[in-house]
Image 1 (cartoon, chains in turn cyan, purple, yellow, orange):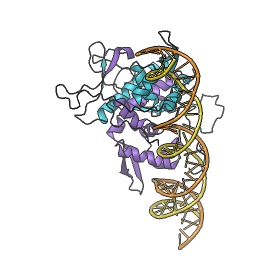
Image 2 (cartoon, each protein chain N blue to C red; image 1 turned 180 degrees about the vertical axis):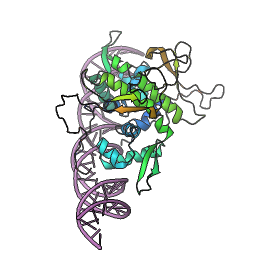
Image 3 (cartoon, rainbow over the protein chains, first blue to last red; image 1 turned 120 degrees about the vertical axis):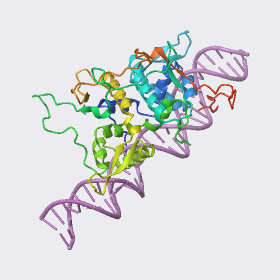
Image 4 (cartoon, rainbow over the protein chains, first blue to last red; image 1 turned 30 degrees about the vertical axis):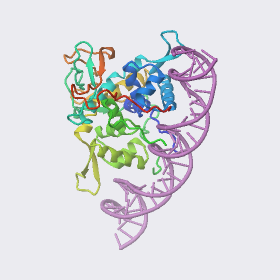
Length: 169
Length: 169
DNA sequence: TAAACTGGTTTCATATTGAAACCACGTTGA
DNA sequence: TCAACGTGGTTTCAATATGAAACCAGTTTA
């Protein structure tokens, strides 16, 4: 009985983020929102996904406070889906995915859309991971420190949090 | 008849990237690979996903040249899954997701793992999108320019590439 | 006032996911 | 030496998610 595996309570922020945004449509919906798309039918036309799926994804994104519903600005009957601050903060994620895609998912001569800055119409700079002094870090120069159990007051002291079910799946 | 919608040939690099990495497991497998995980059973134990799914995801990641299979370093019978350069280039994507998760998916007092730089054990700096001169850009200061049809030699001249099926779905 | 559009929901078929059983091979270790 | 165990899977089958299409109520538009 496969119920969807969830990482909602994971201690790893990547896992939680993937839990929320790690599907085939949510990130593309947010991308379109950055491009100014606001209405159901626009999303649907642009993305070419089924209406029921779009409906369900929009509902989830609103529930996660990534999009919010606003009344139509012209007083019309419909409403809009707009990015919240939490949604706008996905900008870097989208840019990183875009840059990786540009670098690795297109043939050399193949054209792709470009992210330009409004001021001088030039491509955005390549993102880099840096230390707190601004020095560029490659993957081998960083590591993940697992959450440290609260010192001297650990509730479930010795028991590893990594313990998992022991069935053979 | 729902066959999986694909964005393989999209002109938008984000769409292609999501097509490859936009599922519940691929990014987490790559995350674990960054943490030094190499073996089938380690991935399985760490992620707690079913073996058939892991098997299929590893196969896809290898097919996409994000992971590669290497012989066991100790000459053993098993083999390893190691990141390729294309896989290592996902580092920024993972870091951006991590930072978004840290900022928006944890309660204030709730502990989470941390990405530190090896040199001085301090958290990595927050990623920022900048223009080509290094000036920080917020989402409203950038825009996507769609691929421009080759000037003066457009093959399918007037036909919009955004045309989609017209059925009501 | 009828036609078209908007923003959905419902229905139903197919695809994907997940758990568990199974399996071949290699290694321990008694 | 041979039984038990671990590894790295594949197979089977049930449950869930996705997608296409039909449907629908309310709103514009002609």
